[in-house]
Length: 420
Image 1 (spheres, rainbow, N blue to C red):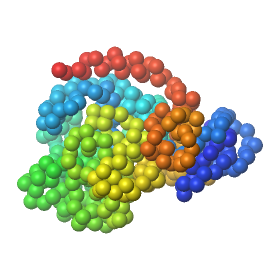
Image 2 (image 1 turned 60 degrees about the horizontal axis):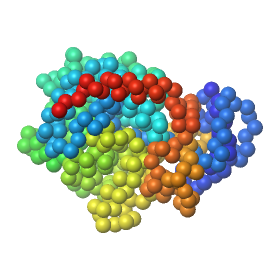
Image 3 (image 1 turned 90 degrees about the vertical axis):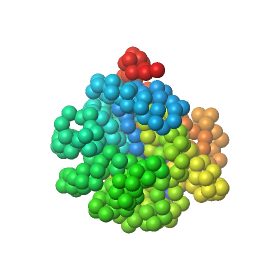
Image 4 (image 1 turned 30 degrees about the horizontal axis):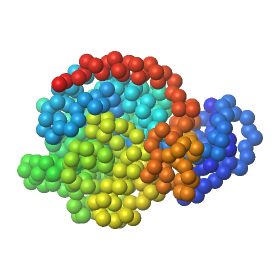
């Protein structure tokens, strides 16, 4: 497959702008030049609009797509109680269509790669291949007395990795849910499996004060020191949240070269209380990307909004307007997330062809004093006109193949999930 994108403005990795054409061959950008005359199977005239790297959602639960708006404005205990009742009604078919709805939203709002952990993950993997989205999928692992899975979670994770390894768009991994749902022995086994299979780990970490207090009560250590004591920490670990961590714990995480997925909207909506210490993490050299979390705790998967909230939350918390600027927020949603996932990525020759086209005539992008500032503080996902993933056009002129059927099916199936 070959694609020629003509007449584009391009946002380069150093945040400079270039004007010209982009030639994509198979899954990669093969040439960038002021004028390319090579014939291509598909030609897109960008018309002077902006080409940027695709956005990377570093933490979500796609299978929950049908649950949007079903569980809002409750305190944590009743929120969890109601959520578990709803989730008990989920079947593989409902997870499939929930994933369809979630991935449709991601494509339409410019996300080209995402990191996920949820039940019936084979259904999400199928959707990745059907819609053409790059998914990093961590099979959820919990203690056997807590699971609703058929069979043992670790055995299921091993099977999932075997079944989906080598697929072009699906990258399987291991997802120990959290310290409060995985005991240290189970965590060590999950780590052993990931290391043996040469894959990544994705896990919730230090999301709430309750998690820290419970870990101290049960194991006499806080979450980060506990993980360090069992030799869990490593460069293939991607931790979601990490809002309740100390300066010394940040140093420990940085030394182990772990990656962090910051979820500002979810943290605020669920009132977890802690604000991820971005400045200390940056100074320690940690790789920090952005995630939306699920549509239950966000309630959308729009990474443009996540960039804005990430920047504003830090500014408000620190009383410092410059603490996380627009370029840093954009990097978190693109390059830092890609780095965490090991993606060879960016608007450069030889890089993966995961990119989006942004309409510079959209009112949210006008005027053009600072396009990066517009992307972070002004825009939302509606400014994206085309989404290209792995060298394939997944959205053209804001239309995705089959989207009307997905919406219709989602509306129909979600009716049976409502619990008063």
